[in-house]
Length: 521
Image 1 (tube, rainbow, N blue to C red):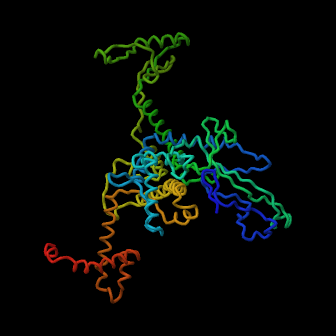
Image 2 (tube, helix red, strand yellow):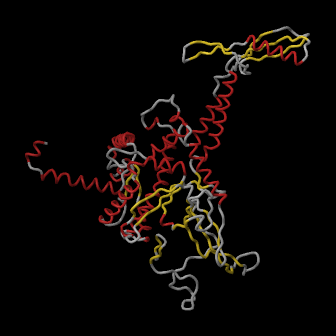
Image 3 (tube, rainbow, N blue to C red):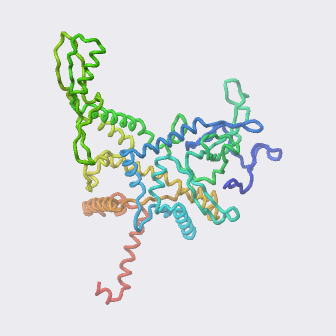
């Protein structure tokens, strides 16, 4: 089996196709042929290449659209309601502690020697130190949640790769993209409307790499001036897991909140404009101009405006009130001429807005925004107090929110697993085949709020003990002990065995204690 890492291939090269020595491909390692390119739904840009020199496709339109989305996500995160939701999500996902690390590796179910487990734990701690995750966990997770993507450049020593990763540098997701180039070849097939020898294009080779551009053109042509081609093993890439079915792009968790947020901004602006323009009462002056010509009537009206209008201004520097006469503002008074035959000169008032206190539209859009962010409304509404009750008092929204946090942690944990895989292979602790077998038994565990966990565990244990007290008279008559262990106490086979071993060892330990120590106890 060959190992591809950092652009180098180590191992036996695969033989593809039939040969004269082995026309039936017996004993030769060969990839199965297919006419469909592999799709992992990771936001990778896929295009077909062929010909002698190969062809490339310009994804500048899609790249600009994706970069525009990232910029929009970042601007949305500055909005107060969205920022509150993001902070609540990040605080629930990564919980730093004084004596507990925000993340650790659980390899209890790993079937390897203790020496290998110790090495794996040590390398995982090195990865956490390289990321400075203990101090920057909040910033890293927040950046990943907002941008929907996280890129790290893996740096190793060129002459000593066995030393492992020496540095991890974050990369702006607007400057790097993952590309998948698919090369096909024609082949005669046995399925098709044109007969058994219809030609089908099958996958010959699939190449994945990253393109880094430090310009604003966002072009993906493989030229030295447009971008740098990087081996996929040199980049740690983790995305949100949300893929648009139409564009196949990885979108962020804030994508659903774009429309509610824009509507909320518009309705808030409309409310502010309406209140400013309709809050004060306006005076309306109906001036009788008789049968004066139009120019004379307008001149007479301006003279009255300047004669009777006075503007009192408070001077904060001197503490005095002065009379400033200036041109009339339409937001203050209205002067309307009235012709002969109508009513005479009259002064009335235009009442202000009557529904200035109604905020139903704003409240509706705020709730819709909170729902799009997957955060319970009770967490973002200040009128609701903080409740530290039993599990029966936890709302359904809180349960859904905790499941959402668990999905986020699972997606984000791929970053640690990718870096740990590279580190273990570089240092020769495991191989690619070994990693494929043991990675399923590894789990990245995030630190949680211990107070809430203790309350939940104590309540669960109390309920189980109450149930145990009720079924105790029936043990040995209707229910065996093993049934009580599994169904009532919800213990695993390993926990049951450990408890039984400890119970058997306790009498022996008591007999070995000296009499003086037993009397003191």
